[in-house]
Image: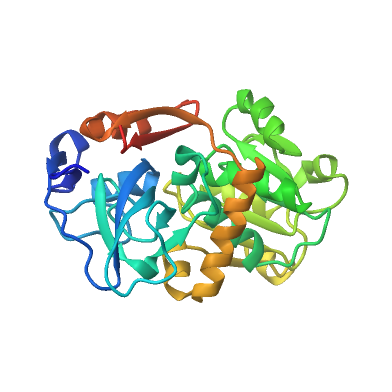
Length: 330
């Protein structure tokens, strides 16, 4: 165990080259009800970049160790901790995962069932969980039902595709580049179109005559309206992102005559409000899909923590072949 492990340090909000560093930190022994975790890996997510820039909806006090998710291994238990063992792989449900060691409350960790791929496990907490909850919490989907989404090649979008296929639902997926169609279809997408496709006209051909019952919107603006125009009466659109930085502009008729519902989803709020049993059931189910190979996220590259700025810059590049991760056990 490193006596002075490394941790990310966000000193100010702004460009990562100017605001983000790594530093040696002193990590205490776990106190009563706490566990010491040796972190194994953590991804660089859009939310992490937004935190660095100072544009996220929930910002830490500075200076701060950042990171919204990751996976680690329990190294030591504080007094009074029951039901956990040293050596278990766990997901820490706490902020500040871009570090080599962290002490967290024992009740804030989710134990993974056995040994799973550390990079894949590190990406389980945010994107797959967002996909899982949106697929389950807003509309009761029956086998064969269709969902429609934009940003289908994003981390959440790919999770939606795979989970929908595994659960017996069909997905209509909107992307910016036609070149993405093949890999998304290989991942389980039933139909893939570009933003230029007018879903109001094409939904019947694309979905075999059955309108989608659920839309998942991460873009906003005209893209969101395009999704809404494909929905069946009484359906729901869930907005969880705003990549275009454009507001939703929904015609009155979709509300009055189609009875569409528009709701938002933020995983952080769900985790704060959900019952502990529901949170654990969610991550246990996702770990099961990961173990069975029905859930997989491509990895573009990994970086040691000492190259955290390089990792963040790489995560900001378009047309990557997968996620960027921090290898915290390197």
